[in-house]
Length: 103
Image (tube, rainbow, N blue to C red; front, side, top):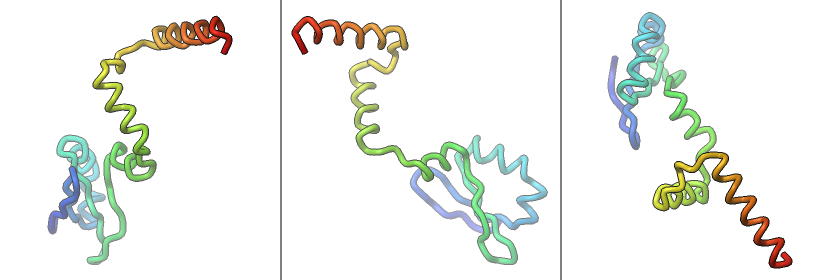
């Protein structure tokens, strides 16, 4: 392995294509255990990146700011533990109240 590159929360390490191929299982474990990603190079040229599915999804479909704010507020209010049944009851109750008010 050649060098490390720093990013926000993960560490990237440069590995040769040959080392990536022969140690693929080990690389996969390190990705999860150490929150690490790997830049794979062939003949000294970076060709690909191996990263966790979580990091890929974060990069491919970043969470819109509004959803992040809603998530933070939900945790603050303690509503992240509501079951689907409880959510359905709240929705039904709100609709019933709205109908009673003529809305």
